[in-house]
Image (cartoon, rainbow, N blue to C red):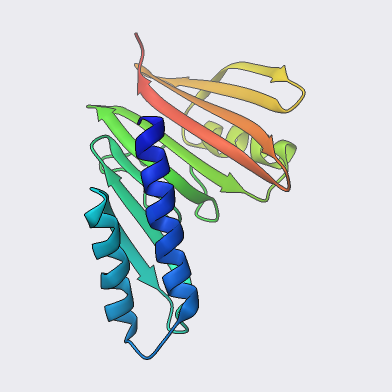
Length: 172
């Protein structure tokens, strides 16, 4: 995604969120539609969901390769034996090629808690830990193998949260 496209998405979403915050007498559905229409004028395919109080509940930007936003679902066909806890806030989800998946999520869990959770649950799902490293003081990685597949978790400290990137694919 180019810098210009990212800027356009950012401006459209900022305008949409500002509209959301302003409220008004329009129905929630009308406000959602207005935000989606505004983004569409900039060539952006977005789905907006507001709560009953008019707060932004979910914004999903649909791209050729997947989705970006907040509170996303796992990409279609995502393996059910690859662990992505339900309390992680999925911010990006895609499947660029068959049997290849990438998910980025935020969690308030500590790096150690994330590592402990994925190690325990992946092991229970039949995966074998293949590698573990602390790439920088703020970034850790653990990878697993099962049958002809690889799955890697990269955990990066992100202020009070952790950004977790999960990549699952066939072995090369």
